[in-house]
Amino acid sequence: MDTLKTTTVSIVILLLSVTGYGQEDVDSPQEIRMETAIEKAGDIGQFVPMAASIALILAKGDKEGGWQYLKGFGTNMGATYILKYAINKPRPDGATDGHAFPSGHTSFAFQGASFIQRRYGWEYGIPAYAIAGFVAYSRVEGLNDRHDWYDVLGGAIVGIGSTYLFTTPYQREHFELSFSSGNEEYLVGLTYKF
Image (cartoon, rainbow, N blue to C red; front, side, top):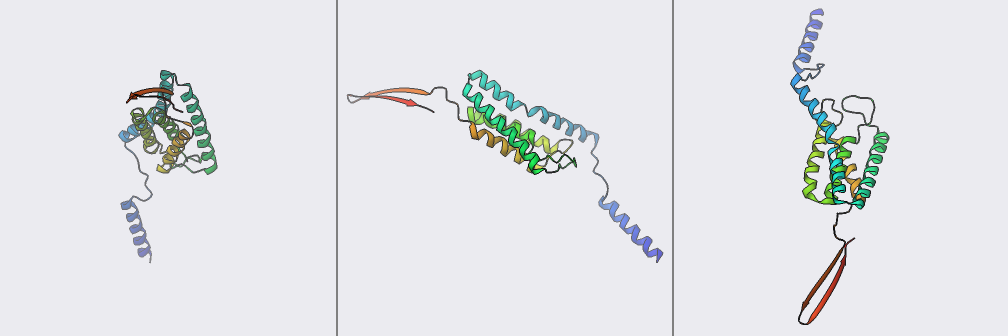
């Protein structure tokens, strides 16, 4: 009977060691450096759409856009932190703070990117969204695995949604005066854009 127990234990140990059960996935030093770089780039990158938004607002003298940005920013930050505390989702890395959903870095980056796109157009929006997308990627693939894809998707939705509540497309000219003539008729038009 002891031989049967010993054989059974040996087989279980062999199976566990072959399948890797109980062993932690250890990253190589190169992987750790790369994941650290991705995470740090994402930490910095979250501020780029905000800085670009402010630069565009100032360059165009767009006071209305400034107020729209501030309202969207405040709504985004409030909604993000209310959801973090209300949902209390644990982080994938095992951290016990329970504030994984939605990703704050992602909501912050996407709020700035969506403001740029909504207010000033896709020619500015595409690069801003590319940066925001990298920030979302950095939250999932960074060294500490702070979020999963549900967290970053939630952050993107909160960021974009808070912008679209308040932001209108930028219009340089609000008044347009037109004149046309033909067949002894004259037409004067006045267009006001809201």
